[in-house]
Image (cartoon, rainbow, N blue to C red; front, side, top):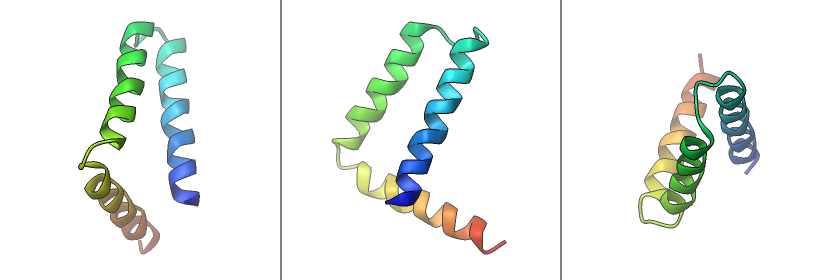
Length: 62
């Protein structure tokens, strides 16, 4: 749970940075956010969460 919250915060900061640097438009940011919500409601959410947990565990073992 703590990893998920921090990743959401990290992705939010990246989106905010891209918006502020004008590298990403508001429409693109909306699409990215909505894609995340739709992805979370599909069957792909489980494998994505497992992959993220595996990457975090691998980084922790370095």
